[in-house]
Amino acid sequence: MGAPVAAGLVLGWLADRALGDPQRFHPVAGFGRAASRLERTLYADDVGRGAVLAVTAVSLPTAATWTVQRRLDGARLAVLTAVMTWAAVGGRQLGDVAIRIADRIEADDLDAARAWLPWMVGRDPQGLDADGIVRAVVESVAENTSDAVVGPLVWGAVAGPAGVVAFRAVNTLDAMVGHRSSRYARFGTVAARLDDVAGLVPARLTALLTVGLAPLVGGSPREALRA
Image 1 (tube, rainbow, N blue to C red):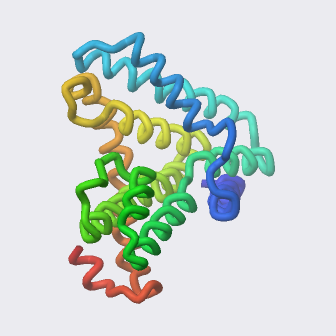
Image 2 (image 1 turned 90 degrees about the vertical axis):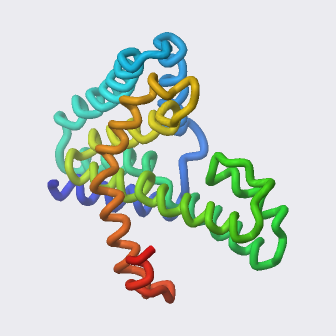
């Protein structure tokens, strides 16, 4: 990783901390819409069709970014990296929503906490008590810290802006079709496996960071490691 990419990753992360997610023309949302259209065209209850979706949806934006990336250096490469990183990283919104839910639980306002929960998880919050809500939030923060913060930064360090784009494309596609359901049990297999591979190092690095940084929030590294 060269200095322009390193600077761009830091600037992109700082942009997310300062500004949050882009409010209009979010590239990840645009990717999701394009992938949905491609899914409607390719869908069949078949692993091979799902593989075509996964390879096409991930390779096209990655190749386009790589083509542009190869032509840039210095400040222009740093700017491209920063923009892609800002679009891919979602740490501020994740933290903001988690804190809002925590504040409402502390105020014993479970209805308000449940109302915010769908921003973080896909499950129905209506049957969850306070402990259930807390578990859902902690699980979501843990998973999405890897998927929406550490992962893009790790793959950006490996392959520059194209790495950021590839990881976010894989992760977004997994969220769309990579879960076990009657529709996606076969079609989403390749997307899910790609996400497993892409997230292998970021997930473990996230766990190590959680353990190492636990004292900063009054936690215990030993208990964090056990969890």
